[in-house]
Length: 116
Length: 114
Image 1 (cartoon, rainbow over the protein chains, first blue to last red):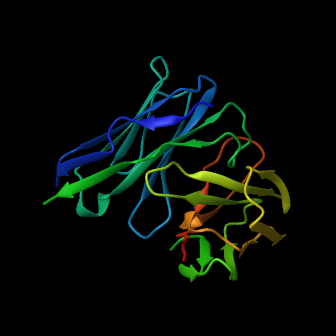
Image 2 (image 1 turned 90 degrees about the vertical axis):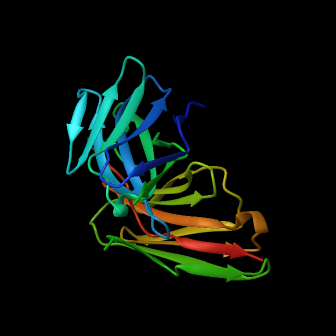
């Protein structure tokens, strides 16, 4: 089956710099995308989502960009802080999956390391 | 503080033991899930309960037995597990019906099978 993947397993950035985490998806029927953050010893935490009728969505210090042409998703974190250190992974779901886990596909994750 | 609570946080069990994992969601959601998270692998969906009815079982071995007594509680009963079953077991909940919505996860149970 099709799966969601990430370009880099580990990303190291300086505290205060901006981070960009990338994700490629292969399911052309996907129209709902989610980013999760998982800190050590915790479960995945919802960060932000975006639907395919949008190219960009902003949250608090985070921005998700969606390029449907090349099936690419990215998460930008502004002014990274030590608390941003975590594994970030994306997930996608097909059209009208009705919410929940139906058709939801997760990537393996990128480990973001914030250096002082 | 997460709206999905899992107990215990850590569990060590022998292959002949029987134990249960517990999950409770305080979000008013109508669907609950069990996921398995192993190192360097994507999350694996194990079981799905919509409105207390099991709707999906992704070829999970029978040594894992789920139970959903109501829309807020979910259990995973374990018996005669294998060492390769050692992993982080995550419970999640969501609101299904209508448009897509994200899953909300608990902090998981770290299971070690000896």
